Length: 253
DNA sequence: AAAACTGGCAACCGCCGACAG
DNA sequence: GCTGTCGGCGGTTGCCAGTTT
Image 1 (cartoon, rainbow, N blue to C red):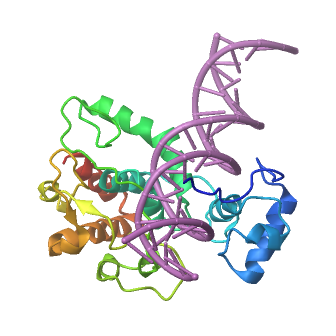
Image 2 (image 1 turned 45 degrees about the vertical axis):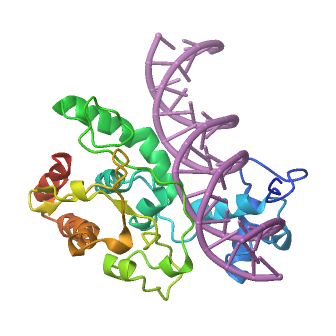
């Protein structure tokens, strides 16, 4: 049957966006809001594919995007989240206000992957990343395929996991896709507690033992929230030393 | 000074779930 | 229930600037 392309490929601009195109897109979205990406280029006077417009807006033009280098704290949080969630960049980005999934993905591929390898080399310990294959991995991370998240999981980044897990829709339009959809957790790995911090793992495809998020027990459900609470606490000035031990605790699973 | 190499990042691609008709 | 469309996702590509040889 074949799927129709999202837009005709002929006669459209490709490659880097010009200042003028950026301005047109920004002005249009400020006036009419996001959505209807297919028709947006025509209405905005752009010779671009709708997908391209969406990507440009989401990854670059959106006013709430944080510019500048990723901080060491963000680095560490990304690594923790990656150990929990695998390559689900949109979920990870949802917990880092102002950062985009693309930015985090790029940062991971260019920096953190190596950092993790180096750290593993220094300690002689197996790396925690699922993408790095030690001889005897303690944890295996399942990488689920991309999912589309229902509108009911559209919640602000600052919402707690309780809200996420109860499926309470948010009144705002900020994205956070840590919704009650496809997250699977390996209960065998959830038991790990190090340094007072619950250290779960995400998924496990070696034995096919998946628990849909709807069936998490209380401990499972609090796990991620706890992680962020700890993180936020330790981010406060004067807690630098604690941050290090907090972070290390996750490498000892 | 120039060529080769490397790293970072924006953009593209194809897949897939949700949803409307 | 089926089909087509839309929007979102992760993976990959390719350009460009910086660094090394």
